Image 1 (spheres, rainbow, N blue to C red):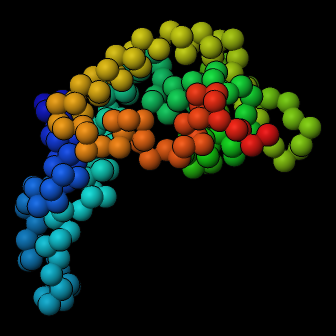
Image 2 (cartoon, one colour):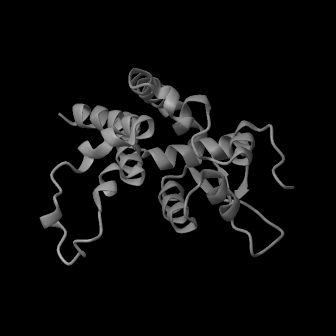
Length: 195
């Protein structure tokens, strides 16, 4: 049942990107009487084709695919991404890592505490007391390698889901997932890290 809902959410986002009129299925049950206290002269019909709502639904559906695959390994999708980024980039200050992963600093800090408690990362050394670098531990590298096949399976599944739903409409298709170019290059180890 959840898989059908996930596929439907991704399909709706595809439709919203391709033709905003089709996205009205998102809020088909919302009528003028549902919105109490709204001026009747305000035409809110355009809200039925909200790209933001469609994108959030698709993002949650995609995240559920990764979460399901990584759960048996004791990881969440964000935690896997943190470990992978540290493996690719090396010891990195929290603020820089948060920017790289497009995460709120507090979200990254909460995840880092759990990863550190499990022995998968540790506080790195820094000459600047204002920096709080994170470093992948050998156990963290092992956990990342253990979970990688599950991540790859989720990646492949999402790729198929997107391809089935006219993924060419998504910027994610060619690696442009909204993550800034510098972030992608830093993860790939090809860009200027600002150092």
